[in-house]
Amino acid sequence: MANEQGRTVGGYLVRILGVLAVVVGVLGLLAGLTQGNVVGMVLGVGFVVGGALLIKRSGRAGRSGAVASVR
Image 1 (spheres, one colour):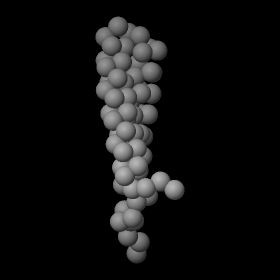
Image 2 (cartoon, helix red, strand yellow; image 1 turned 135 degrees about the vertical axis):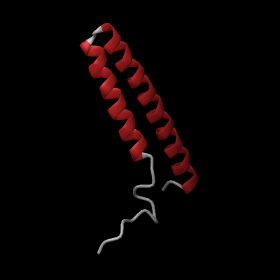
Image 3 (cartoon, one colour; image 1 turned 45 degrees about the vertical axis):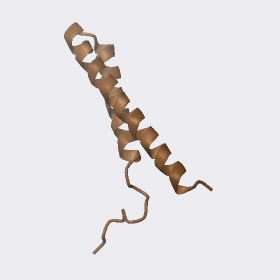
């Protein structure tokens, strides 16, 4: 069973990797656009989407107190 400190460090690591993926994706997308490289643009979009999913996954979803209210 993982303790809370391990979850926090893992969450920060996933968030850092997500931000790096988004930055690399934006740079790749811009480079692909300037050079007309379709493969670079597709890879850039893939990195941006993947990084956004990592950032979203590292958030408060699944932790106590993050439950949406239901009416």
